Image (tube, rainbow over all chains, first blue to last red; front, side, top):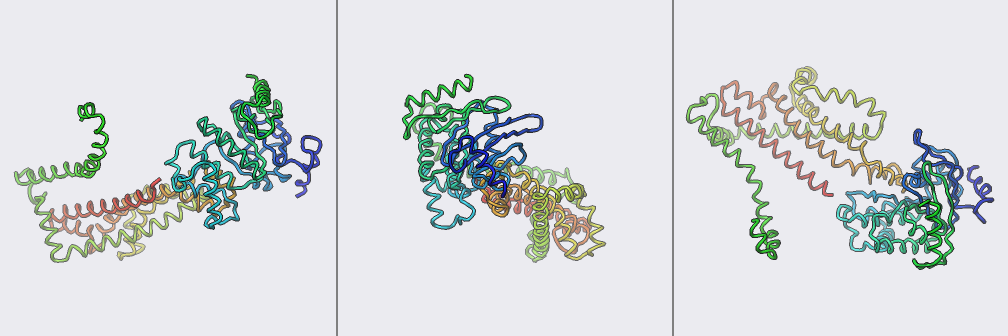
Length: 264
Length: 269
């Protein structure tokens, strides 16, 4: 556990003002064979902060999340959650909503959401069941608790996956383009849902997206990754007050900054 | 139909919905048309003398023979013992197949150690085992059940093993991210995902069990449909031979339909 004490000291000089960042990534380099997916990436996300990561496809956005969830064991540099290295169990505090729904085809929506329940919660317990049903309602799928994924549209399936991520009650929730399959109206709705959940639970959220508007609307800070291999181009602070209006002047400014950094 | 669709655009949809189930209900009858025609041709070929009656009996003669044996009760003994052999052989073969399939599907080392051997054993024809099994296990029921089990084992083993090892990496990652733990991820993700492969294997296994029961009964049995078959040859009774073949066809199909029905209910997603 020596390592656990390490990051707060080291990150004291960067962005974390008080009790150390929830997510600390330092000099992260990830290679797949000869391909460098991420090159010396630094990222610190404070407890309760909402950070968006944007970048062109192939810049390693998803790889960054995979490292943080503990799915990639081999990398150089450091990645820690609440001061615990992701390879030493730090990833247990992380919940992930994948880009694809990744649902169990044979299980109904309720059972799929229950997969996200923490290990010490018995899915058969009435309280757990209520919580699952509540989450199904939160993502706008009430009435579909007994449906199988095959009966759902792509956007609905993605929302089941979102509910599963929320059921986990993670300290850090990672989302990999969770709204990209949704139509505009549902997307707005689910973005606001996510903000509500984030506010209620005080979770730390890192959202990967290629949607500049989404990043600016949701996040406190937007990390712009640039091209191959992925490196941090710039970090844009979104200064708009919450709750935000989508037409807020400050959001437009942030969007312009992000777009400039992306070089479009 | 095309013209009605164009003219009565409004009601056609409802009409079709009402009409389709009926059409579906009788569709399977189409599968009987060709066999029925063949029986008629068969009958004509024998009665016109193209085939001699001592080589191919009339269809009705076969039915009479089977009916006669059923009436005396002789037939039921043969059917019962064959069904019993197939049942226990399949049960044993499927169980062992599930064991080996699970272990080799889950553990790469077990797969690397066992799979090459099992893959080559599966290519040994059923009849080739018979002398060895007679030598080892005698001519009792045990030898026959074991031989059938060998047949039923391989499809189950092969399908389940690949089914388990090919469970989508995406779902394994979900289990990992949500900390399901080894046991829970097997129970909730890996095994359910492999159920379709298992059932495909069982279907193949039941099919092979019928192949192997013939091998076992042709050579070393005093009862059973296979014995009846070889007895028909010894007695120069083509009606018994054809009747036995038809019995195999009937029960083989019946068991296949049963497994198919289980498959349909279990894999309904």
